[in-house]
Image 1 (cartoon, rainbow, N blue to C red):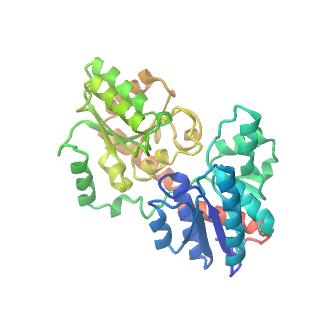
Image 2: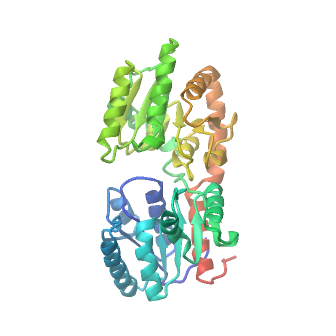
Image 3: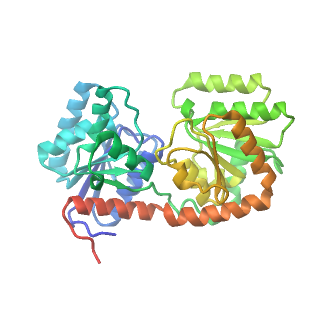
Length: 390
């Protein structure tokens, strides 16, 4: 890890700490800063992951950071200026567009270095939206969460390549470690999700919040096609919070009922124990309809030794090696997904295990939290004009 100043204080600004990859990365980096002897503050609305931040030694600065109301954003800027001065903040790191405006204004006002992480490939169908997105590029450096995202940022905003650093998201290898997941944790999930003891069908897990672009509807369509072909070898588990999208959840439930798939497709809700979930499953899938900027749910199962079926676009082309650690499938093509699911069945348990071992070895090497945190702290040191320690 690079040496940071003894009095280093990091302020990360993110809308909320509810659930998701950007939120987890916020907590991981805060933990790394604290481990280096620094202070880590997170300005946010709060959320269910706030307790984890504080348990790791970080501190919560609660404010309506999720708001896109210009007056609230101005108020947040004032709050951040006060926080930066009071806590003697060394560097401000924004992780989302709306709070990035407040964070940028506050950083400029206090002459504190500013960096931002481009966590997603934001669509820009107008110049106004492109201007809004560009706030993430106004700092000293931009962090992109994959090479796919980095190339998008460079092209979309016409900025110098050396100003954009690709740092893939990291997976906590101590948490996502098969050896530390007790049988009782897997059994608890099996019962909660209504999976029969000794279930012989291929247990396929789609983990992700319930939102249309994550592809839950597409997989229900693929399962409907398989049923029409007389195939009943697959149990699909959809794990994720609807985050208030009651209409989409109801739509999925209606599609399951209309196809008579109640026994083959389960909406199991939010899951707090993803390591156990991946071990309960035989295969993980990430059928996103739009390109993933990184796609943690294609990487975490690989760390747990599970092969992955993922959409053939975006950063999953970096994280999944076809035929070696999983398969890439045509995005949005229900028939292609039905065929891919059958292929995963035909490979058999031994074939899937071989792929899972290869996936685990590669993912552990490339996508650890330690590697991600070290690279992020190197960015901080670079922005502060410090040399990396030998």
